[in-house]
Length: 157
Image (cartoon, rainbow, N blue to C red; front, side, top):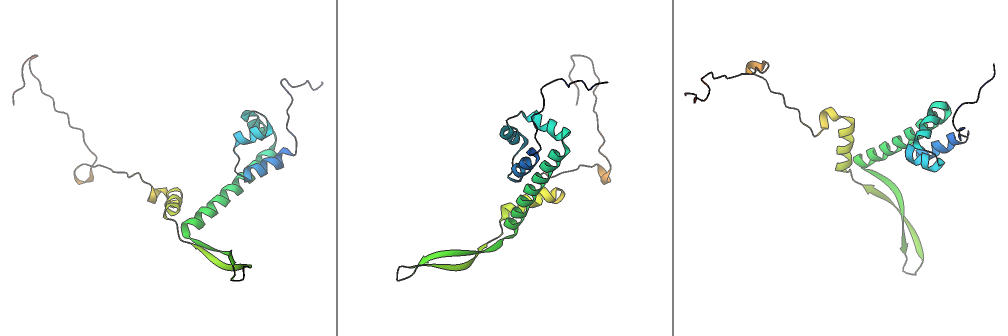
């Protein structure tokens, strides 16, 4: 029995695409952007993920690293942070001198709220849940008022 050729166009996938995809994902590339880079349809990226485990793993690894870096920066922003910096100043004689200093960034309330809403949505979400109960905490009981009378007559009070 011979291997019959598979129908359809042969794959354009190359082994080096796994490394390239990982680097693209570390830079925040989406599947659509990778498809554009490799000059293929976005569905082809999905097909390559299914057919080539090393390609799929490299994408997962790159996206995980990129997401972790963003999460770390968001956390630093929420908590406030400091870093070493250098200011270039002119001396009275006209020379340029480098003056080292520590730059401080205060905690950012917006970043903290964003972090908490995503990490602890049960405690920090904007949506409030209100539950209604009947007397003594019992479930609500629907009440139906029905008035029976002759058609066309006004109900009496």
